[in-house]
Length: 468
Image (cartoon, rainbow, N blue to C red; front, side, top):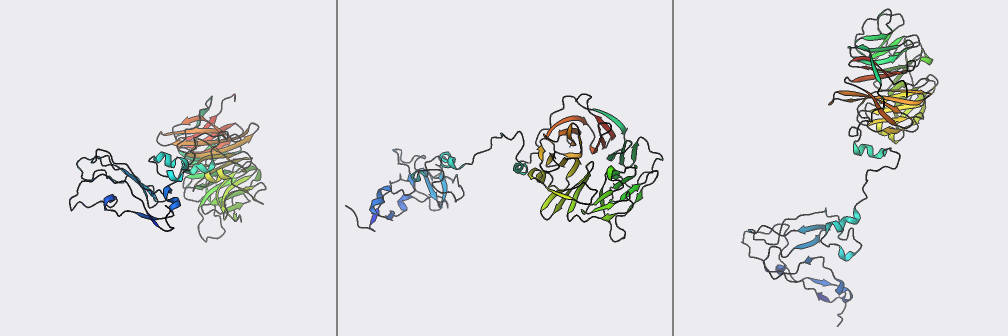
């Protein structure tokens, strides 16, 4: 017989086995389902044509002959859009047989049929089967891009310090101590040799007359074509040692005494001498066209974070309203061209104290936590060099054998530093030497074909093997 539309169709559920009586003060837990015997018989208003397909959403195990068995009456039901599994009570001393603590809550936002194509099979007792279709495909760690990492993954992985260092070179470089003992913070190549500076100044070959020590340690050096030396001190002062002079003289950046500029860096390009550029810690750049005697501010419309000389150019890492960018001048500062940073350069060069080195078309950016990225096309595209965390110094060169970058890596726990050589075009690195002291500055000596380093153990020269 077909009932009239809107008639009530009773749906009976199988009866549960009898439960043991509870004491009056044994109140049910908040999450415990009440006994089916206490519930009124559910009635559902629906058309008779779909009555046979009704799934009330509650599945109760059929009672077994054991009746009061602790394992009887397992219940699984979707409540409030989430999934709850009520586990059987395994404690034989408890009165609430068959009712346990809530084991799983997936947050209340999971549809009962999530991960299944069959709406009637939303809950089948297997969580793995339920969510199997919803799990994203995991990265298996393989890379099809010739060894390059995905820039977007760098921040998520924090990979720089976790990666192994580059492999050792087939033949290690040799080291020569040029001036051992006194700690040095900076090194620069001169027209006649090399100079290292810290609390004292080391000239090779020796300078005559020998200058008096500076009033504060020197940490940034620039040497002019006539061997005039300009430097910044750890106290933020710009000082100048004229050719033939024996004392450092302080040089103000501004003609007036309004305010004090903390000078962080000074650079000079031999081909453009007597041009000198100085950067303040606030990001302003000042230029001198008389060998560092008088300075005037440059209008770059950006805050300059780092400066470096690049043979016949000067490169700057700067920040404007659009973010960080590279600035390059090839005409002694008359014009500056902006080169936007690609993803790798933004990742590595985005830290608070990045390092910058350049030579011709070679550009390198480094950060102690973010690692090292190199470019062989003037900074248009960068590639990250794996295993180069904790960079303390950078240098670059460009010659007939291509572009090279040298980086000093430091591990304080091991108490060692490593000198790494990088092929700038291929971003392939090898450890070429190791030392116990920290390296604070690097400079490439083109005339001798050696890398000079300043560090806590003085001034050293690192020479590659004869056959390369």
